[in-house]
Amino acid sequence: MSKGEETKSMILDRAVQIASVHGLEGLTIGTLAEELGMSKSGLFAKFSSKENLQIDVLRKGSELFRRFVLYPTLKTKPGIARIRNAFFSWLMWSNRSDLPGGCLFLASSSEFDDKPGVVRDHLRKIQLSWHSSLKQFVEEAKQKGELDSKTNVEQMVQEIWGLVLSFHFYNRLLEDKQVEKRTKQCFNDLIKRHTN
Amino acid sequence: MSKGEETKSMILDRAVQIASVHGLEGLTIGTLAEELGMSKSGLFAKFSSKENLQIDVLRKGSELFRRFVLYPTLKTKPGIARIRNAFFSWLMWSNRSDLPGGCLFLASSSEFDDKPGVVRDHLRKIQLSWHSSLKQFVEEAKQKGELDSKTNVEQMVQEIWGLVLSFHFYNRLLEDKQVEKRTKQCFNDLIKRHTN
Image 1: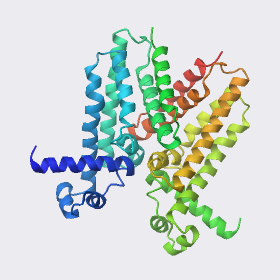
Image 2: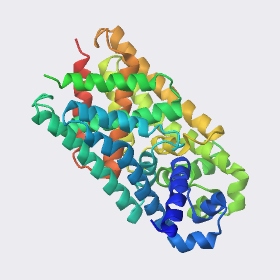
Image 3: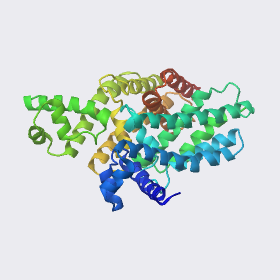
Image 4: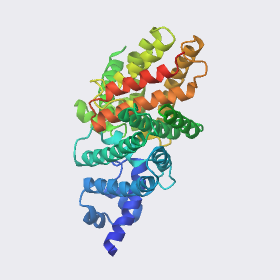
């Protein structure tokens, strides 16, 4: 990595944190420059527009997500163990201390779902890719006979997604101290219902 | 209602629609004045600050939610019928044509969960109140013997909440055409699991 790339990567680390709290729209070249003690023109030279900065932040976030959630999950053996790893790593990801505002992607999704454009397209692609990985994990568990052959894959993935969304909501807005324990119980019950 | 109150109510109707798309933070006295063809100073006289405007928008949204979701639900008889009415009206609420950006409260929740202050406090109060109504509906159905006496109320409400959040997400960002049908199936399965 060249010195320029290293600087950009360091800038993006901070930008991901800011966006996790203030949203992608709350992240401007101006506020980021102030936060980093850099000149606005210097940052502008690196990202050239707010949209480019937002997309680079999504790319950086996606790189972190793969490192902390996807890759460790792919290292576990296919089947229920892999679904479990995906779910628990995803829950923990949205609660990481270095992402003070929680999951960047969940926050950006409700921010950008009604804003057509390149940022929404990029975000949708990231979400569809994770969605498709989850479907694959459930499919593998069915093929191995660990989950009931009648399990509806799309439905199970939506229920898992709903649990993560509700965890994020109860945890961050309602400040419910029991939510982690309860969410794990919901997940265990879901798996049990589909186990032969 | 005085003429001044009528004007304010009309302004807030439009403000709720804007906030459903651009978020509460995307709603400023300046953009609202432009949208309505009114003077910024005239609007400022009515709301005096962005925070007051945001809280009035939440109040107005809450009034609409009660009218379209809570009151019709309270008219159905206690038990599974009432839970079903609450769920389906809530789903339809987040998909109303006059709320172009979907549910104002779901969008605002991920926007404000990390922003301490009066707006977050107000939003949290609204969400806790609906959460407590849902718990009451499940409790009533248990007491009437329509739901299994072993049903964990908190867990069922979180699962319902997760379904609505996932519906909103799949519908608006993923543009999944099957999501309405699938979400209803998930809900029916959930009720069936807890039925004697």
